[in-house]
Length: 85
Image (cartoon, rainbow, N blue to C red; front, side):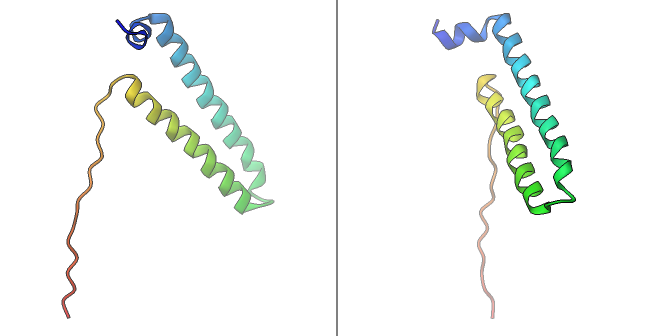
């Protein structure tokens, strides 16, 4: 068994992973709450910071997909655009 498979089978490893996932989410959400103080002063800076923090939250979710071998796919539809004069 490889090292990654061994770590995935250990309960303590899952517990630490979940703890870090929840703690980092709480830290990011607290930072978003504190950026509300910027809203009256500088709305553009508020939006930039919240955009980066929301990217952090979504990247944490994407990190869990390959770790737990969840089925995930990207669906796109290719359409042919025809100009009719």
